[in-house]
Length: 141
Image 1: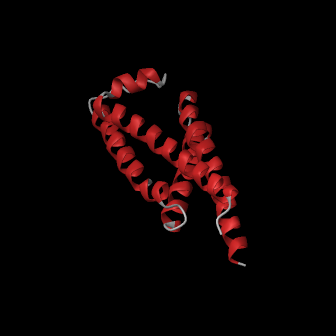
Image 2: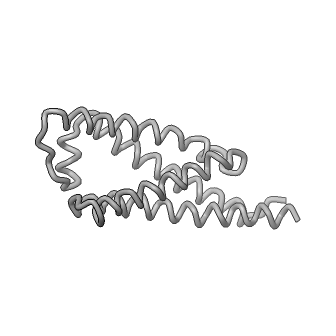
């Protein structure tokens, strides 16, 4: 029997996954369509290179593709457990990557916005997913 707490926890996880998809889609679309506007809106340093534009646009395409891969975790987080775990793990790893880039690779501190955004979403999603899996495991006993 599915309890109300199970439903609320699963729904909260789905809301956070949807929020992550929306954030990634917005960042990806902005990077693809207008990379200079995204760079100035996030107060990121301007890259003065002939080829910087294509790399920023490819970041947009890859971010949109990554956001589309989160959809199974949004629709059925318990049925598609691998997709859900992969979505949460990738979000946590992206947060760690951006943090590493600023801390150890001497990138601008403005990139910490991406680290905090991805990392906090990943941590919240991971906590909710563990709670959902725990309730599912305890219900099966």
